[in-house]
Image (cartoon, rainbow, N blue to C red; front, top):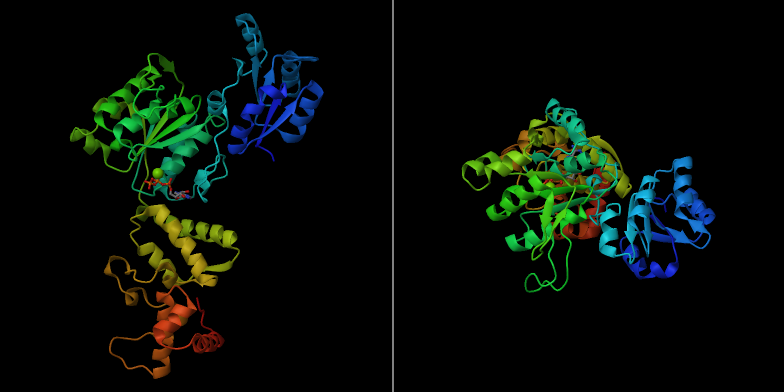
Length: 459
Ligand SMILES: Nc1ncnc2c1ncn2[C@@H]1O[C@H](COP(=O)(O)OP(=O)(O)OP(=O)(O)O)[C@@H](O)[C@H]1O
Ligand SMILES: [Mg+2]
């Protein structure tokens, strides 16, 4: 599979200990021992990275590097050798190798330069390690942010991305990374709110063996893992003050100290941070260091809440509808007028993430036809902000069964209304709905078939 292959031009025995690591990482290793077979692999498999021994019987890395220039293939080559010299290193780097290593090859060192591992998250365009995700938005408030993001993507500037929960902060962070020259290097995210201070410190900067109880081996920190790429410090405002001081030093000096280590390690990492709190307020309250704030806030990207993005709500809703329809293989023909109104008047405290989740559910509940307002609600859920169904009106198809205040309705209409309500409450589960109504599933199905014939859309 493309973008999954690593080519080794080497004796097999030097690589076998690494096979399982690559496999676990989702990468396939292909071995070559000659230039001609290596070129075949390059042509057919388009590997993401090449590791090449400097010398093998009948093979010289110089020939490979010459081909790389001639054929102009854009794949990094890491040279390695058992017995190196500084002059050889210089010569090979000048010929276009990305790096020059001495054996043995160590997984921790390799891992740092591998393309970012695919996230295990179920889905979500923003979790992909490539550019396949789309940022949807036409409203001036988001277009402004996008324009700024585009302008600053390909720089090393630190960017502080702020916005309410679910507004797309991480998505923008990935956008910045994948639109920079660092795109092929790792993107490493760490949530600063998720760990207590001492664990966060060793996650960020790594630790030496024996640095503290439980530190049974050396561990590389996220900064080292992100070397050459980008680190995302998520929820930075939750970082402890003393760790903030250490982070500031890293940003100023571009070097880190592993916990329990004695040497400082140079790193080249672009730093992005997010916050969903008002960080200026945290600074005022002395919960966040002002100097660190200034250092992080070189470029501020402020994401507007969804409720302030006007008709982008519908744009996003349609986008997610298409996306989930495809995913679940259903055909939907849009939203009812009431559903649109509902989408536009809801407050969206969980912003785009909430809309996305809601749409996934609605697509599943609707299954076909139009998405109706009741597909947005689940059993036991309140209408938002105390608004009642009447304020939105019933879905068009059901107008005939609306019960107006104390108006008396024909019994068969009451029955229909109760049946639909039971389905709404049970998210369309026929068995549970029948149970609620105290009728058999068979009777329920017959009634529903009748309603369908009358042109009603049944979830
Ligand atoms: N403009 C957009 N277009 C398409 N998808 C979006 C957009 N904004 C956000 N999303 C999607 O919404 C979800 C939430 O976005 P993201 O995780 O980036 O939010 P966040 O601000 O980091 O949230 P939190 O504060 O909870 O960490 C993601 O699945 C993302 O792909
Ligand atoms: Mg986030």
